[in-house]
View 1 (spheres, rainbow, N blue to C red):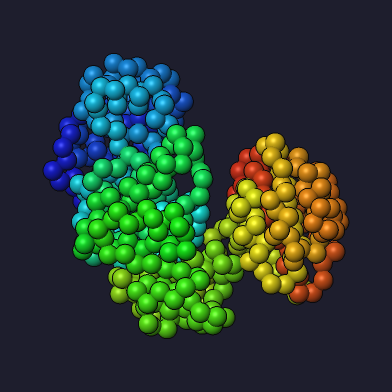
View 2: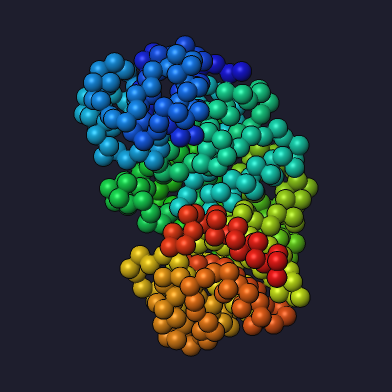
Length: 448
């Protein structure tokens, strides 16, 4: 088990439990650090709270006493807690450093880390990268914004292990010296602007992934994204671009038939199971990152010819009577749905709808050219129907219930069609999460 080395603080406040905070508190306590845990919403009967108390950790629940800050040298916060939180705000005013648990990896392991961030595609790219390394015979762990907390996984890593991390802007904003061997920056879109105080703050948080890189490290970046290309100019790392539109002899790229890394042919595009140009970007990023760690072409090919997608993210479900079913329940906005719809060359039957957040859906209109029918449900069904009419796309049916739209879409479809759930809306009008919505889609499809 790995131990913290040269950790600069002995008294730490962990703010917020959940997966990240609980893991940080446990690892710090095992390393002899004096830990106080503070959580506003947790209750004393929760197993993680009881476990910490049994280990002698002081746990303060139900309030945020500012005087706790007088007892510590460092605050490690749950990534989701905004910096406007009174404890965080006061800590910064008094000069206390505020980290997320990702920064602790600096003092915990020396293993090669591939750290992946971006506005879209993080989970797919992380999963591809992890699987490519595994299929290449390399001992690899995955953590961060996917799976287990990074500090918990890192503590148990063996010397020969590689670590693949999916990192959000929330996690990266709480780092100072964190340095992966390979950083991957996929894209930059307006997101989480309320948390970061605007796009510049969001962009600078993402840039933390490469702040500490040196000329011995690598930065894999999307050369087709102008914002990304501009941002990475400030990094001293070796820049490894990827592009779906331009030959990149120093990175990963494609032509009409083939995927390459530098001048090396990797795989025919026709052999890749994942669909969509956005997934092609994720594939190129994964190839670039793993080839830098000497992944084998055989291992990469094995993944790309079998991987059907991350659950709920343009996930291939099954084929029935010549119809292909895809679950894209994670598409909770127009941008995500537009990418899914345009991923297919054959006719698409689109199932969409969900929570009404007050926005219009006119931005979808240019992307509906290969949609042969709309099945709409939930609070936004009537708004989406208006978009269908403007785009001259038949609105076959609207209703309240998603399960009925799925069945009716199947009855309407013809052989060769794609039946796509890509809601363009949040799920909360009928489902607690987008995962619940996607699971229901999969269940109904398998029962057809």
